Amino acid sequence: MASFKLNPISPQSLPPLTKPYKPTKTQRPTTHLTFTTTSRRLSSVNSAVSGKEYDVLPVKSPDSIDQPEGVMVIGQEREMVNRSAVVGGFDGQLSLESISGGGGEDGNGKNGGEGQDLDKLIDRAINATIVLAAGTFAITKLLTIDHDYWHGWTLFEILRYAPQHNWSAYEEILKTNPVFAKMVISGVVYSLGDWIAQCYEGKPLFGFDRTRMLRSGLTGFALHGSLSHYYYELCEALFPFQDWWVVPLKVAFDQTVWSAIWNSIYFVVLGFLRFESPGSIFKELKTTFWPMLTAGWKLWPFAHLATYGVIPVEQRLLWVDCVELIWVTILSTLSNEKSEARLSDAAAETTSSNASEE
Image (cartoon, rainbow, N blue to C red; front, side, top):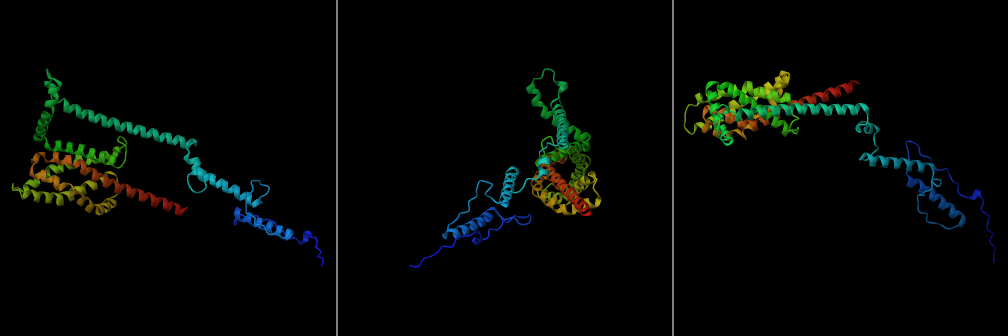
């Protein structure tokens, strides 16, 4: 038999073990790939020594000594990223600016927030005082219409005769000073309508804008009451007939000529009261004229069937003002939405121009 001689294995005959790759800032190998490469190299060493092949599974060792330097760095960075993603509530690293600014722990930010809360509280207290004072005054005047004749009256008698006597007093004022009475009614209705519009837009009950409500009320008091008084007299002069077919003609005239005139007046006057330029006012009026006119066709034709068919001439404005609570809400919302949108666009353009200059 032939004899075989085993050559001794020297360190030079082993495959060269290269130094593990150290990741740079621009290229970082993942933990799995780095450790798998190392495991394959160890497998090749075992095969060279023993002549057998082993299947080596890549297992991450909990001991930091067995891991290359790049693996440890990547593991620490991934752990920091995962913790920041959990704390921040989004997929990514947590910004230090958002922590310091949003936490409210900064002295200036905290004082500024407390100051804003105090201003809002004072503003709402003023609004609540105004509303409660006006409501108390109105209810007191309505309930004390017969205070000169209360001798021996019971509470039931006071409440029973108060509505009738208030209506009689209103009719008496319409005879003596009709224009002023209608101006007051329109001013109150337009103020309430704007308040309802602000609440519909999402503002708190006593967090309304007093200046905006004052503008709407002033427009209703100075223009709507007086102009409506003369318009209804003009409408009766233009259509003096009492036949049934006259009512549709009056409704059509109201919803074309008069609605177009009054909607334009209301929009333009509110724009001037907001100190807007004439060019921007008339530009927005052109874009909103047709939508405002067609929006009225969904409400007023049905209401004006009663206005021109049942209600007497001297009582028409009171009936119309009751319906105006809904219509003023639409008008005020549309007018202020256009104004706020234009102001926000102007602020965005100013910010972008400043950023481009820098």
